[in-house]
Structures are given as structure tokens and as C-alpha cells.
Length: 352
Ligand code: GDD
Ligand code: MN
Image (cartoon, rainbow, N blue to C red):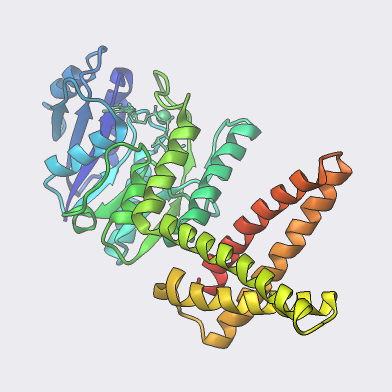
């Protein structure tokens, strides 16, 4: 089984020697190649990599006039000749000694193996608590927005291994820089395994990511949601919700005006009818392709979602008024949150 180790680099000259040495030692007995995809680093990383090619099986791709971490990794896939690809950083934050463990999991039947910071036994060294919080929050957001990866604890790791056919023939978008997430959404695979590792300290040089990272990440998640059809669902769910408001008001008016019902009782009945209406349309349209649970179960959960949404809405309404906010505005904020809660509840539970 030939292994291609793909390493994107930009100004990583001072890390190369130790990196190659440790990879070579870790992979003793394996057939492997190292693919360095360097974006014409001013410090001459490409040059040193070429020189070290006399001692190690290195192939250097020097890209001129092109930049970007994801596109570099994708280029590496195209240049690689192995059956298994390993992607890692050059700065030794990803310990080469872990590679055999990733490969073992592939041999045992996994299609994608993630070097994971967030499964038991994994960790991050020397991050301030707020850095950890941002990382965790961003990952949670991605997992909630993209049900396909909701069981993956570290979908943005830059350290992973995969079988060649997972990415062969897929159209990966080179724009985002969380290439693993892109692969987990668009790749052809069945089994994902996470292997814990310690995300260490950068040996030499400095990080190139940061700055507008969070904003770019959110845009990437939105693009993937769109690709997955999750944004379409959100729109359909909104349309159904709007229809439900009309139905609710219409029945309330009918019951009070023409049947002379008590206004409280009429509201309960009208609300229930609106819920049944919304359920029907969401079941036949919004979530048509993900009807796994039996009908009674979906119906029950849809009611639970409505109830949860109502409680959230009311809680926010009372809370914000207590803080001095105008009651109409407070209700609007409540409705917004209720909408999100109901959508997510239904997406992950009712039609999960
Ligand atoms: N060719 C190329 N082009 N390589 C790049 C570029 C680029 O534009 N930008 C960064 N790299 C290379 C770096 O030289 C390094 O080998 C690797 O990509 C990771 O870059 P770092 O700057 O060290 O990233 P980081 O440590 O902040 O982030 C890492 O951890 C994140 C998880 O917290 C990366 O592995 C991320 O992918 C990962 O999401
Ligand atoms: Mn790094």
C-alpha cells in the first residue's frame, strides 16, 4: 500500500529537516512519498525541499502566482500516486509519529481517519481558554448546520488520512480553507474514524491563518449548507411557517366570529390546526427525503418542537422586557430564536 503524504507549505524552511527526518523514521517499512506543495515561499522552502529530495522521497510542486491552503492540498491530491493520502502541516504541530496509527485505522476498514483534538485523549497545547472556546464554538456550529458531519468531533482538523477514491472524481471547492470539512461533505466514503492526538506547538516560523478566519469559516459553512440543500430546507421551512400563521389567524377568526367560541379555546384549536398543517407540508416537502422515523413519532416530535419553540420565545420575551427592551422588539427577538430552535429540533430529531 503506497502512501502519499501531502504537505502544504508557505515559509516553512526551518521545519523541513526535522519534519522529513521524523516522517521517514515513523514510516520505516512503508512505501511512501512526500508531496510538498509550496506557494513560491520567499524563504525558499521549495528549494530546500528539493535539496532534501536527495535523501528522502520528496516531490516538490512549486506554485507561482497561486495561493491558498485548500487549493494546495487539492493540487497535492492530483500529484499524488499513492493509494492512501495523508495530509498534514509542515510546522510539526501534527506529530509524524501518529501517522502509522492513522494508517492502521485505514487498514482496519476506515475510509477517512482524522487526527482529532476533540476525542478522548486528544488535546491542544497552550491555547488560551478563549481560543479554545472559539474553536469549539465554530465546530459546534458546523456540526449543527451540517447534519452529515454531526457525529464528527473535529471536522476542521488539518491532520487526516483517506483512501484515494474518497476524493477521486469529486469537485472540491478550493476557496475555503477547511479542506477536511469540504471532503467530509463532498467525498465518497462510509466509515470515518477519529484518532486522538495532541496539537502541539509550532516548531519554527509563524501561523498563516487567523485574522478573518471566523468569518471565512462561517461563509464556508454556508456554502456547504447550500451544496447539501440545507439552505433550501431553511427557506421551505420559513414558507411553511408563514403559511401556518395565516392558517392560525384564519381559523381563530372563523371560530370566534362564526361559531362564537371562547377566545382562549378558539386559540388552542387554531394553533393545533396550524401545527398539523405545518407538519403536513414539512413532511411532504421540506423534509421529504429524510423521513426515517414512523409517522406517529415524527408527529409527536413536531409538537415537542413547537412547544419548545414557544417556551423559548416566551422566556426571551420576558427576559428582554425585564432588561428594559420594548415589548414588541422583545417578542420579535423571541420569534427569531424560536424559529431557529424549531428548525434545528425538527432537522435533527423529528426528521433526523
Ligand atoms: N501552499 C500553501 N499555501 N501552504 C499554506 C498556505 C498557503 O496559502 N497557508 C498555510 N499553509 C501551510 C503552512 O505552511 C502549514 O504547513 C500549514 O499550511 C498550516 O498552516 P498554519 O499557519 O500552521 O495553520 P494553523 O496552525 O494556524 O492551523 C492549523 O490548525 C487548524 C486547526 O486549528 C491547520 O492545520 C488548519 O488546517 C487547521 O484547521
Ligand atoms: Mn500551524
